[in-house]
Length: 241
Image 1 (cartoon, helix red, strand yellow):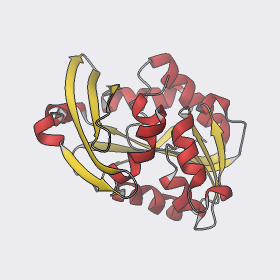
Image 2 (tube, rainbow, N blue to C red):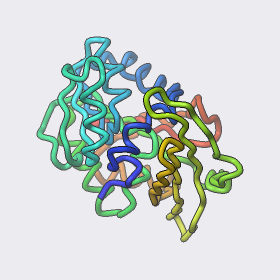
Image 3 (cartoon, rainbow, N blue to C red):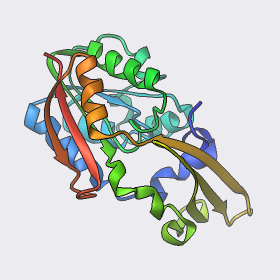
Image 4 (tube, rainbow, N blue to C red):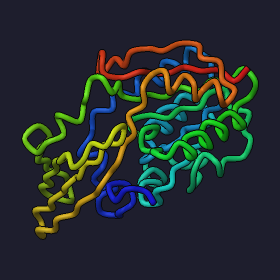
């Protein structure tokens, strides 16, 4: 089941206004341009920001996500009709012969079970054409980003047109090996409703990711730094031979 922050209708509707700066997606758009990608699969597309950015540039995009509420937001955006949206997982995507597949944000880390992660890598491999690429990011566990997931560090209050004041913050709940669990709290001032969402992310070591890619038949081409979080994340670029 998707986390409530993506699946609850009211939370999905305010996801973008609460995180309006998506400069982190610039690196993916740039890679699509570098590779000359004309057909892209966006895994864990969420509210469709990257999918719509690429489709506006003439790229044929398929976006897949298990959260129906997030997909509804994506479909309703200007240009939403240009993207092929799939409600489901990477394993539900037919062979596309895509030039590029992307997994942005926390989407890769949200696949916490090793079997699910391997199935995702295999499914993306099948959706790519020979010579197609997969690019995704994952946080470096050594930097322990979760230490900053506290109300004091993450609290924000945003005035959203048509919604009113919305408060949001995160609280770290548990760290068990590579699994980190936190709670997101969202408060709607208009009626006082308080909604919470629990999320768990898997922090994979670089060597673990490289081994997973090799096991699924990829050739690792490059590991880049994330421009928006320098030194905090790995951006993997792998190729289907």
